[in-house]
Length: 197
Length: 145
Figure 1 (spheres, rainbow over the protein chains, first blue to last red):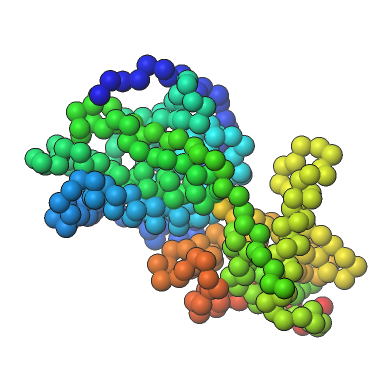
Figure 2: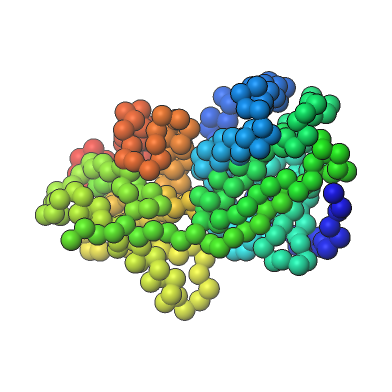
């Protein structure tokens, strides 16, 4: 897989308000290993249930989507951020606030030079693969962390931004880095409730 | 100072929750029509405020006030709308509405996998927590003020 060379770094500085901790946050402290191991067990079970890699990827994405549509409300409640004015602000928000809040890592953001709606999140450290050495034999096209793509997609949809989210590069598959690509499609509009005559 | 009633709408206009504490006069139409009227008004008001704003808009529509009551509005980026009618003695309560969202709605509805997000909220726990929270507000008085 060749690495695309048309990239530019977005370097604008934004003053982020640190997310306030919700009153129940202390009750939700959980061991990180437990979370990572649980995720691994989930993927392993899906691999047992479905033979094809595409099916496992699809179900991981779907589960992620169901998580994302609710997780976004928790994110909005705890971070109390204002509406983002642009796609790049939104992606910055995801990388610097949301990823930090939920996974404790901050991916770096870059944007494609060719398409204005395409952004890339490069994950230096991915806590979900802490205990994974390599993909099992016969599972070469498994996107181990595809849940993350579904989460981002679901969350964006709830704030009226349709997007396609996929893993552009994956260390587990032999690439140098792990990179998530977010491509924004058209904006979804609010539906006005139809009045019954 | 008191709270009259509270509405919760989702992004599609469905009224997820309604409760009232001191309401002396009803609207004269069915509850379903009342919710649709309220949502339609809010939707129109929000776009009106944005369109007609003479300066760059920041938060948009916040509240309106009549000679007898004040309607407070809070909307999350995910489209959830909290509407509270209080009497005139109450100032800016956006942080209260945000607390209703983050400490009650998110905690007891969003995080509950059995609660569907696009239907009126059935959870008794949510009703109880919301009621307790409203009654505990500093501007809520048990006697209709």
